[in-house]
Image (cartoon, rainbow, N blue to C red; front, side, top):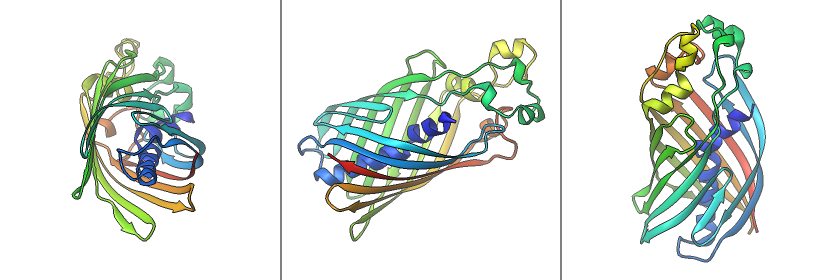
Length: 266
């Protein structure tokens, strides 16, 4: 169950919304420390994994923003360089999108040719790397370069996302488009079968490196001086390498995540 929360958080739904709210509250990256943000939210997410289905999960929103250090949920960062509208940070994130085999649908796995008794759980990990951000009149461009330092998959991930904010009174609507690339080691670990599983007789499937494009929209609206309403929807298109995985529900071409929350600044 908790895997869905981590998938949404790592995809940046709630965290990017909180970050944008902080910038709006402070009036720019050169202002004083922003302090704490606390709130509540709910996530609706459909999973690509066989037998998982759709979940509705209530979650807390906890974050802190200082002049250089910040943490938001399961990520943290330290700003190492600021040059006008450009910012570079050292980042660390928990990658908690591992899964327990017992949480998957045994019948659904069997239809895909997998015997659950031959499979192993996929463990959580920790990624570290660089976060790059640029904001200007043409919009917002963000990139992350991450590597697994917990030696779960031993892989890397690179993401790039562009958004352009529109102001409607007090509300801000930001359409976004982006792409995430995962290295062979990372994609093989989360969507393929492990060598030891194949040695037991499971299907030998390794997707190799994958590229996942996505589109989404972020919505922000202040409610008084301290409160903020946050909303996100994200639609990710799965490549053939993931759709063909025996761990994935048949005919799953894409996944959708919806986030709605309320946050208060302190």
